[in-house]
Image (cartoon, rainbow, N blue to C red; front, side, top):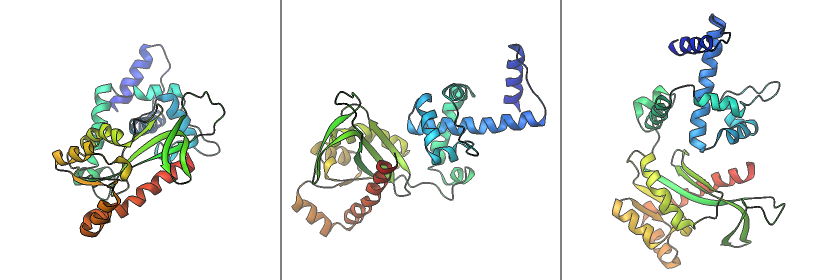
Length: 270
């Protein structure tokens, strides 16, 4: 109610007509809920207001989360509306709220408060990268890059590189879509690793990837932090030996197929 009263007072001070009563309060509560959800989504996907509005108009999952009207037609919030939502709360309160939600994902008691059956397991992260292929209309499109992947049947692809970091619960802890040229998987992992540690709340104790991410620098990085090295070795003999002698590594590497499937869904849908 304090927020509603403050909004009414602000509108009246600006000479605008402010509605009151139960119906007006109900609409304000609905708008507040949508504002919070839109700002949480904006923070998660790291998008600007224009891009968020575009994605809300296209993605049914985002529409469901942000409670966007879909009948009889989709009514996604406009760029200006999302800008207003960004000012719904003072920046300090909004940032504190987003941080609290991040903590709630890792805390059993708080997780139940926000509707989760249990807290999310942030201990192990499976990382994969893929190419989001583009429909090439011109050889001079600056946001499209030639990606050398060296895979059978797809040695070279056109598009943008996407990195995903997924927990055992299927939660996308970390992601980045490179609109510039990718630095290469080993260097990319090195750049994203500190953020993964922070998002895990200090719980990260294992990192699983395919052989494209493996390097001496990354092995040393994990060893210094005491984090389980689940980087798939580039050497086939070393890989075969670890798969035979290390049951934890073998099981973690087999689980990585689910993360590859997650990337495939994004490629096919978006």
